[in-house]
Image (cartoon, rainbow, N blue to C red):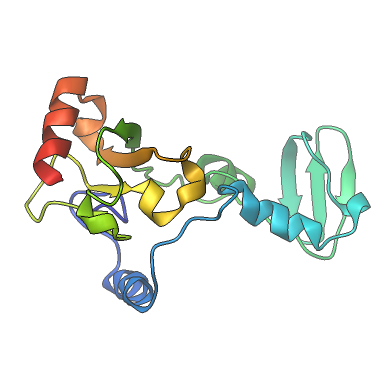
Length: 176
């Protein structure tokens, strides 16, 4: 549930197996400079004049991109956007989007005191838990938190995205 952001696990078993296999083969990680590091790494390998920013795309077709300002003839297109925009540009049927809310909290404890300082994702093995996952972000990627700060993330899906602070803190206290 915490990976696919769905309470009923309607995701294909084949895809689920693929994702779980990659989890078991590796260690949780986050890019040191945030998720934007992925796009920056891709962009750094391209010539400067082939990237346009802040230019809304109106349509794409094989070999062609039409924006609000220009029309481009291209060899390749990398479509990096959210599901709603992608389905519109690709003329695909509308996709169900799973809602998630993630809270980031600073804990009073040392990061080594929570889950023994390990790089783990914590969840509760029961049907419809309040949170689908939580982790001590500062254990996984220390650069995400100031020195000597324990940063926790906690995510909820569907009806639990409007948790009040007291319920959230009590539940995290139970988990950790």
